[in-house]
Image (cartoon, rainbow, N blue to C red; front, side):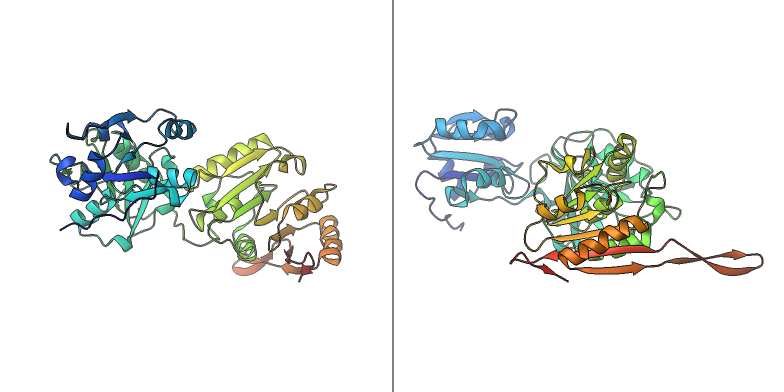
Length: 419
């Protein structure tokens, strides 16, 4: 027996999940909510799944949806409003949009099993061991950040061509040997799972629009290995020499200390490596890379796509003027332009209490700026030195890279500066 959902608050919008099986798979408690509705909102595919006994007015979502939502819901205020959603409304669904718009107290959600739950059940994969990436309304390049050998990945498809596009991305990123399957219409009478093949061998026809791509990741032997922590190989980046090298980069990210949901300003982006590896630490992180050279700015965008973080925002312009209007940062990295008048002070002023600022330099002039800043704001100065072993005739010697000076400082809640 299915338990009835908790009663919705007065005038709340109720969101009911429905699967590919349609009305036969809807629990009686959810059926009662749909029968009692005055108006039901949803996509045309979901609304077509309702039987005649649901007599409510059916209102398909407009496109674009989000700007129209407030007016659409307000037009039906005072009526029993139900939103019909695919699967679990709070998993890449309309439930999140509604709670952000109206507040959680004004939205009553009755979920249905998600397509991911069905896929894991069909494949015998434990949900906690599976990475999920949605490309519905999002760039396909996001998949690249989840590619690690032996990981299992579910990609929520955005259209019939998604499986072929995923296979092409796997090949391009050195994961052609990965095993690929497509699961269509999960939970419905037309459910189907394709035969398993590799991305290298993929030649299947277009998929049903309602599908998931299952990937068991396998890296080709010659492909560049990209780890899950900062300090990717320099070869992972296209650059013109303006690149924070691997070992200083790893130490810089450690100093910046990204945490989920935080925002970074990467000032003097160069090749974008600091912002890109900040974003790779957690999918909820955000970053803005400020680069005055248009060719380098375009290269940053290409590097971000290649390394699976297409959400990186690239601002083409000279700082500090180009910083105007950017969201408040949790951390700022200055990789170039330290001698520009007003730049460091503008970055410091933008930081809230608890924000971190890290600046790197290899020149005496910029080092003098950092030394003066440390006297004003506190913090810590560190000298980093890296040497690489190289052939010297028939022997091996050390080649010393230019020493790098790094300044790290954190704003305290009181406004004083903490070393």
